[in-house]
Structures are given as structure tokens and as C-alpha cells.
Length: 402
Ligand code: GDP
Image (cartoon, rainbow, N blue to C red; front, side, top):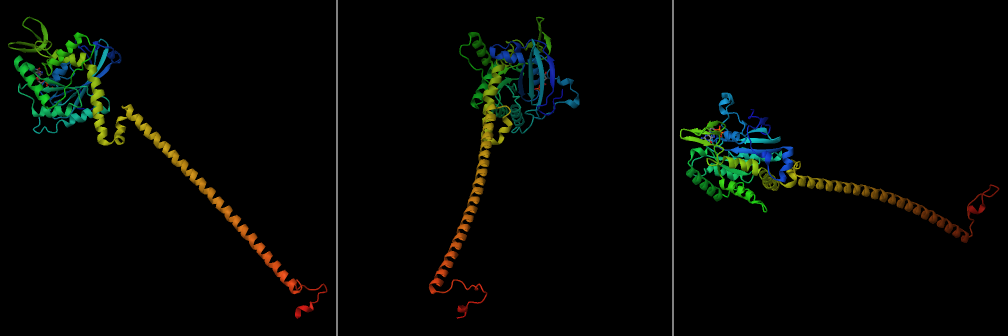
């Protein structure tokens, strides 16, 4: 398992489910198409290391998506950084394929200064969105302290709640008594409300049958889910073999609703609300994020990143390009027109000048003629011969000398 690959290039592992999960039975019509095609669901698990994230994911999908820590050679130990690891698996149930991607944040919270440690996750969420491989659900693991949310939890949730479907989870609930769990849940919900953190809420539909409404209410009443994870099968005192954790005083059963909320979490995540989680991610969270980004960057500048997946932006861009093309054509036509006008004007000016020159020539010729005629007239009046021409004999006219 190469979980240290560059983010986004996580290896795909094919897994056969060892038990029934339920996504093959997704209930309504809307699911039919995605069920036929197989579908992709990306879950992110966030929380301090050692809270049982890997174990829970393995328990949830009843498969070893994560290798047990003990099986990793010392060199391949998970780094205690907030670097993002992602792992993908195709899991199949009754012929229906589901691609599950788990984005893990090992070492989260292990730093003294955690102020900025949400950033890699947020970046991851953003990038997931760009390649349209969005995170549909974020399981946020809360340490079973029994007190209230830690400042780091509040900070993380506040950074993530507008971007992903947040599903808070009390980790290792078997370390708390039933009463402690109930108190802790109430305190967590109060903290979440106080900090205006939006966690995933199942949508309520009208015309839904009573059973579905009851199921939704039942699921909602369990949030934050108090879970126990285990990929081991243990024997109960009455001889049953169950997934659970064995203690000297008895066995905590993962799949027993009296013991923990694991079944309800799985029901919410995989069976009942997978489609809602996906829709809310696409229609609300992603749209909000995109709008925020576009406003922040200026619509035109950065739209290239989004146009592949957002038809509205693509259309807008195409319109702008079309308008630019028209404007360019218009400018070119104007230029050609102006050139033609100039040529015509130059020609007209030339013929005008030619006309003017001819007119002047004719006028000069006429003036010359007039002067000549006037001269002739004066001579005739003076009784002088018209021209000092030689006589036909070739002798000079004697009058000329006088
Ligand atoms: P991660 O670092 O968050 O992925 O945690 P792991 O899944 O590797 O679990 C860390 C340790 O906690 C392992 O020894 C698990 O067996 C144990 N663990 C996991 N889930 C539970 C749980 O629900 N209850 C208890 N008591 N221990 C658990």
C-alpha cells in the first residue's frame, strides 16, 4: 500500500467485501443509475493518530482497506506529520461497485503548534473539488475525553464545515460508560452550536413514509456517533462470534446497537444518505466554495480551472470569446472601409487637381489668344501692317525703316 504517493494518485486496491454493507440496496429511484454504473464516494477521516481511524474504516467496509499497523515494516511507519494520505479501494456488493477513497491525516494534532495544521486538509479538499473527486463526507474523530471539544477540534471544524459534510464521531466509545457518552454528546453538540459549526443534517422530505422519517430521526438522535471499531472476531459469553473488543468484564460488540452507534453511522453513511451526502457536496458546498473563489479572484481570471466541470462558466467564457471575435471582425471591417475611403479620396483629389490644371491651361491659352487678338486689333487700328513679314520678292518693306 503506497499511501505516501503524491496526493491524488492514490493506488486503487480491489477488495471483496466480507460481509453485507448495504450500498447495493440504496433505496430510491435516484440511486438506480449510479448503482448500475457503480459509483464513487470519497470519505475523509480526520483526527489525532491512535484514535482508531484506520480500524473504523476497516470495520465500516468490513475489509482491510488499511493494513494493520503491526504488519508494516519499521521503515514504512506512518509519518507523524499532517501530510495527507489517500487510499482508494473498489469494493463490490451484489455486483455493485463502489469506489471508496479515504483521505487520512496521520499525526494530526501531534504538533505543539496546531494553528495552521488544517491547511493541508483544506488544500486537499479544494483540489479534490477541482478534479471533481470531491470529498463527500468527513468523519471527524473526537478523543473520548468526556469533557468538551478541544480548541484544535473547534478550529478544525470551523475551517472544514463550509467545505465538507462534517460528521462528528466520538472515538473509542468503549472507554466511556453509557452515562459518560450521553453527557459527552450533549456537551459536544452544545459546543458545535455555540461555535456555529454546521454538521451534516439529513434532509427532511415531505411525503416520505413514516418508517423513513423514523429512521432519519433515529440516526439524527445519535449524532455525534459514539463508535467502537474492531476488525477482530471475538467470542461472547453466550458463545456467539462477533466483531468486537473483549474485556475481562465482557465483550463490546461493534454491530450491537445497544453497545455503540456504529450500525447507525454505517447506515447513515452508506445506506441512507450516500446520495444526499453526494448531492449536498455538489450542489451546496461546492457551489459555495466556487462562488467564494470566483469572487475572490475575479471571474475571468481563474475560470480556466473550473470550466471543465462547470458548464455555466464554460458557456459564459464561450460568449465572451464570441463577442471578442465579433468585435475583432468589426474592427477589421472598419479598417478596410477606411482604407477604401482614403483611396477614393486620394483619387478624387488627383482628378480634381488634374481638372484644375487643365482648367488653368485652357484659361491661360484663352488669355493668350485674347491678348494676341487685342494686339492685332490695336495694330489694325493704328493702320500698320499686321506683321512685319517679308514681301513675296524677298525685299524688305520700306515702311519698316521709318
Ligand atoms: P489511527 O491512528 O487513528 O488510524 O488509529 P488505529 O486505527 O491505528 O488504532 C490505534 C489503536 O487503537 C489500535 O491499537 C487499535 O486496536 C485501537 N482501537 C481502534 N479502535 C478502537 C476502539 O474503538 N476502542 C478501543 N478501545 N481501541 C481501539
